[in-house]
Structures are given as structure tokens and as C-alpha cells.
Amino acid sequence: MGGAEPESDGRRIATTARDRVRFEEEALELADQVYRVARRLVGSREEAEDLVQETYARAFRSWRSYTPGTNLRAWLLRILTNLNIDRGRRVQRSPDFQPLEEGDYYLANKVAAAEGEQALDQERVVERLSQDGIVHALADVPHDFRDVVVLVDIGEFSYAEAAQILDIPMGTVMSRLHRGRRILKQNLAEETLS
Amino acid sequence: MTERDPCERCEELLQGYLDRELVQAEVDEAERHLNGCIYCRRRYRFEATLRRYIRTTASERMPEGLKDKLAELRGLPGA
Image 1 (tube, rainbow over the protein chains, first blue to last red):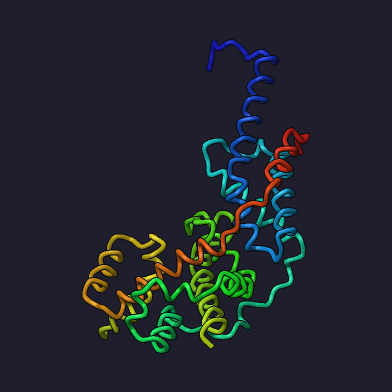
Image 2: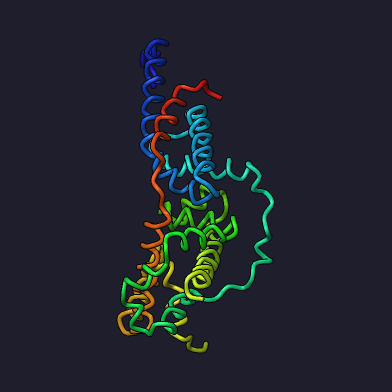
């Protein structure tokens, strides 16, 4: 950089202002995707709205700590999941006390037993699972597991992104996802097939 | 080493397969089994449909007006 003219203060301020506006615009474009994840992490629409607003307030304040060109959606979700944990989600049932869940094919096998193997080929089967049934079944998955299931299955984040957002190792993402989905299927089977 | 039950192995790979998180050798292994096993193929279809269905039904649009509220937060003084 030797020999380059030092940037004038005026120009630097203008560049900073432009970077900031660009950051804010990009963040706002992701609002719907951020909300969709938030909505399934908390119990009500009001809580989800509050959480998203707190997230954006913090993001807009600390926009300088975001590195342009990196994954902004993951960056926002990291703020959001941290805020959500800070809000009193610290008390958790220990994962060790969860009942032992069934295998990955559990729900499919239940459906096959109830309606026959061919039923699995038909899209109709899952339509029996009502929207409320799915929402309740997901809400009943313990937090630690649900966070990962929501990030991957609703937010469509990769395992690596979920690990980054929750600040946990990738192996933990995989084991929580695995168990979380099994618990979800057990809940779905109880809600819809019993 | 004893030969593992191939359907059990497929069940183990299936979620990662649906998530596109397997390495190529595992993808090949899963697909080889799925091509030849109607039992697992049906479960694969079921899982794929279930996954899609959960994604669409549990996904709720942002409420009207929230984006405007967020836009009002722009320009907050830095931390």
C-alpha cells in the first residue's frame, strides 16, 4: 500500500455509511427466513417477533463485526440463538434423561403396519399429519435437539453452519439432529397414529 | 468382521443421504442398496416426503408489518 494517498476522512465516512446501508439492506432481505426459524424455536408468534426484533437491533448495532462476503444468514441466526438462550432457556432437561427413542424408520414402519407397505409410496400418508400435529410434535422436542432440527430442517442450514451458529462441534450437531428427528417421529406417531 | 444387515446400514445412512452430507463413497453405498431394496426405497420415499412436508407446514411466513418494524431499527448507534 506504500505511496497510496491516505484516504480522506470524508471519503472514509462515506464508504462506511455505504457499507452500513448495504449491510442493513442485506440483513432486511433475510428477515422472512430468520423469522421462519425463530418461530419454531419459541412458543408463540409474539415471542418470535420480539426475538427477531432484538436480533436485528443487536445486528444493526454490531454490524462492524460482520465480515462482508461471509454467511450473513448464519451470522444473524447465531445472534438469535444466543439471545434465545440468554432469555432464560438455560434450564434444560438433561439429554441423558430423555427416553430412548426408536429407530429412524420408526414412523414409516408404524404407517406400514397400519396401512400396508404400499402406503409408503403415496404422498397421501403424510397428509394425514395435520399442520397442528407437526407443529406440536416439533414443539415437544427438547430445546437442545429442537434447535438443531429447526436449523437444518426448517432453516435448511448445513451441519457445518448449524455447528457454527450454535457454537457446538459438528459431531454434536449430528447426534442431536439424529436424536431430535427420532423424538419428532415418535411424537408424530403418538399424535397421529394412536 | 461380521457382515452387517444391509437394511440397518441403509437406515443409518439415509438421513445424511437426504441431507446431502455423506461423502461420495457413502452416497454410492446408499444408492446401491436403495436401487436393489424395495423395503428401504419405500422408506426413503416416505422420509423424503415427510421432510418436505415438515418444511412446508412448520414454516410460517413473517407477519405483516414486522419488516417495517425491523427497518425502523436501522442506524442504531454502534456498540
